[in-house]
Every structure is written in structure tokens, then in C-alpha cells.
Figure (tube, helix red, strand yellow):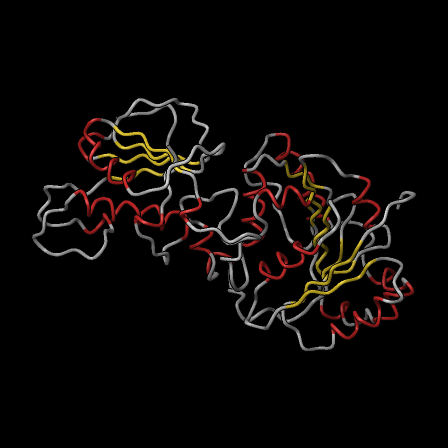
Length: 373
């Protein structure tokens, strides 16, 4: 560490009962740095919630994230600190050790450094290849890679705060790290790899009960693949609802009645940041909108043939004159033979927006939305 530089260690404990808290209490008085502890009750795998709790207590402006099943060489922190760059998050990974090797690494071996004699000192070939690919992805400004893996991340606290931390809607194993990387990029942060400069070692352990046979079979995959991923999540460091988002509405003459229903009961304000712009019909708007996400809504007979900029979500309204409701429109519970009124179109539209942002298990009503003037 440089002269005058200090750091803190925050142990974020997801409800363990193995004496971790007592150990931290004993160590805290002897460590040459601030050592603190946050915990929560054990209600299954809730990494996002406990990491956010730790971020709330952080007093440092730069954060190194790792997991409790990883160990690092003695110069890891120094290397991460020396590479700090504004508007940049460094992502890396760990060498995954076999069970037989992991079981030879004892507490004393970690303390005296002898554990380093039993692990590879250089990246294995497949990680070397991945590092080179990641550098190419950086050059090409790839929108998903290099991939963020939570066992080795270095990021500014303010950048995490700007996206509202980790998304606590992820419960159980999987997808929370991918989501964090996507939202950091969406907020303008560049993800760079330092896999070759500093890497850790992942100790073998039995997998969590919620770990699927393959990533795509995980319980979080449907939420991860929701239609509208806001950079600033709703269930993060600060809990927000749909009503806390800022909306802007444009409407063609054909959709003025629906637009009026959206606007008439809602609080109006003039925010600096528009989360969602809703365009009803073929209305004239600026192609380069300042809104983070755009939703376009049409009747089936007015869908444009081609647009220079595609919306993030496109919806086809159920027809007001329709006597029976098509199953692919996913409206609220329908009554056979009832006309699909504008009021019911409003309710259907709000449910579609809610599902796109919060996932398929969300429930919302028109009163939950706040519209920006």
C-alpha cells in the first residue's frame, strides 16, 4: 500500500452459524486495519441482500468484492488499488482448485504463505485464452463481455451507488453477477479485465442447494431475461417501486384518450432523468431520446414497416372493439364477449410494463405509476 493509504475489511455473512461472528470479534482488536461484520438471518442464498448491507456500512470510496470461498496472494489488494481508473470496473476470476488440493490448504498454511506452493503460480491455458478474448471484447466495446464474476471485482462505490447496488430480486444461486455487469455498463462504466495481473483461487466446496445443473435452468433466469433492465434497479440499496420511476408520454391523435387516462390521476414533475418514455401510436418524437428505455404501443393496423431506432419494448394494444380477446395478448382476466374498453387497455398496458420491468410475477395497477410532465 502507498504511504497514508488504508483499507477496511467488511465480512458480509449470509446467516451462518459456524462461529464466524465470534472469530471476527476476536480478530478485530488485533488487525492493522478496520475489520467489521454484517449479517442477516439464514433464509437461503441471499447474496445480493447481504452485499448491499455491507455497502451501506462502507466508508471507503473503492470496493473490492470477493466470496468467502476464495483466497488471494499477498499482493492482490496492492495490485487492485494501483490500477484504479475513473469510470472503470476491473473484472477477473479465480483458478478453481480440485477438492484434493483444497483440502490440503489449512489455516496455518494460509498464515505462513506455504499454501502458494501447492497451487499453480500462472494462469492455466484456458484462462490465458479467455484473457486474450476479453481484451478483444474490450477493444470491440462488447455489450456483455468481459463478464463480471463476483469473486473478483474492483469498482468505485459511487458507481455501485449510481445503479442502486445489487438487485435483491435475485434470490438463490445464479445471474446476480451477470445482472450487475449489465447494469454497470448501462450506466456508462467500462468493464476491463485484469485477469492476467491478479487472480485468486477458488476452494472446492459442495454446491448450494439452489445451484442448477446448467446456468439456464436456474430459478433466476426468467427474471434475468426480463424485457426492460433498468441501470438503477428497484430492489437495491434503496427500495423503489414503479411509482418512483419517471415517465414521459407521447401520443398520436388516435391515442389521446388512453394518454389522458394515463396522465389524469398521476403526479406530474419535471425530472432530470427520464427512466421510461412511452410512445402511443405513430407520434412524432426525437429519434435520440434522453430516456433510458423506450416503449412503443400501437394498434395492429398502425405498426410501422421499419424504424431507424427500435424501441426497447413494443406492444400491440388489444382492440377496443374486440369481442373476444386473443390469448397472445396476455391481458388481465377477461370476460368473454365484453368489449375491450380503453380503461381495460390501460390496465393491460400497466401490467405489461410491470412484467417487463419486474418480471412475470409482478403485480401493478395504474395508480402505481408516476408520469413525468
